[in-house]
Length: 133
Image (tube, rainbow, N blue to C red; front, side, top):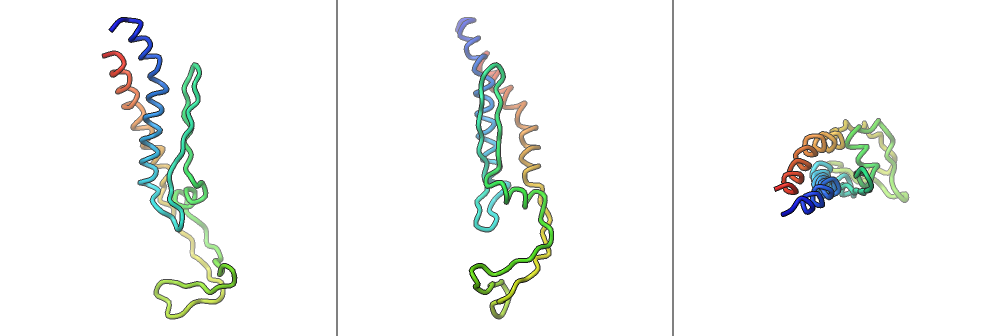
C-alpha cells in the first residue's frame, strides 16, 4: 500500500466514522427509548460532507422523546371519540375525563447524547487505525 492509497483512506475517515457512529447511536436510541404508548422510538440521522463532515441525529417521533426525557406535567386525559376510558384495575369504564398526575422523565435522550460523547472518540480512532494499517 502506497502513500497515495493511505491518503485516500484517511480522507474517507470522517464520513465513514460518522456513518458508523450514527448507525450505532440509532440502534442505542431504539434500546433506550423503547416503546411509549403506540410509538416505537428510534432515531434518524443525516450526514453532510464537505471539508468537515457533520452528523445530525434526531429522535423520532420527537414528542415522545421529550416526554421520556423531561417528563410531563399533570394534565387532563379525556375519552377519545366520546368513548369511555378503560383503565387497568378499574371495575368499569370511566366515562368522563381524569387528571393524569404527570410522569417523571427518565433522561432518555441525555443518555443517547452521553453515549455519543463516549463512543465518538473510539469509533474515530478505530477508523483511523484501519485506514493507516
